[in-house]
Length: 276
Image 1 (cartoon, rainbow, N blue to C red):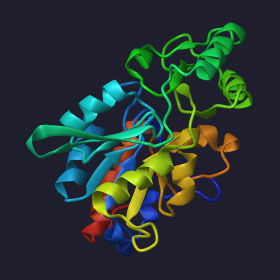
Image 2: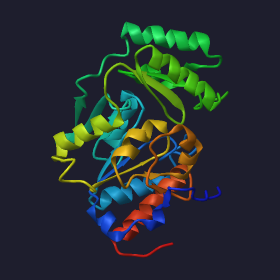
Image 3: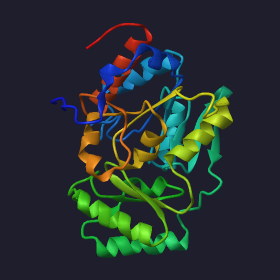
Image 4: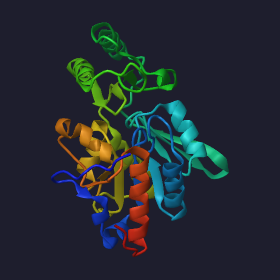
């Protein structure tokens, strides 16, 4: 895998300063094509999660993946919770391995008739569009697969799918693999902030600079826009022409290797170790 060169206004993660890294208490990250590589969770990025968690940091994936996956993630990964379905809910483990949950107050079931009509319109109008295989374990959104399984559709098709949902009154976002659509005024950012406040007492003004988010695609834009030291793994370059908000930092490597690069750099900076 070749490293990307850094384009204008994306700063290499190696430029992260020690004082910035030491202020961070919360590490938030996307999953698909940020932690994963070609659909798999590689050892290097999973080990990076353990390293961050073992350093005493609060680690929370912020993902478009479904409730069924998030149950497993909250129980079995080295994380302090997970926000799923692009902000519909958060899950975490309490003492005694008891699973707790918080649902965004505006989350609406994906059986909503408006969403079903739009789903059927997409499937009828966009050649090759299909429901994501994980749809059966979703509670609040509809996921249309355009790039998770073969045959992959071009990004232009994802934008056509997005347009149908948006024109029909739904909220929708493009990830690296799916177009996710839902009813309700929320996104990854609003529920991430709500979860951090509810569970950890996070204050967005007082605790400014204590969060870093790592992601890769357009559905991460709210996070990139809000958190000043957000970082993109290198495959974020694929979407830069379609995004209004880009992360400040970027890694040299893509996907899981990029997340491992971020984690190694971040931990080194907190320890005062200089790395190139």
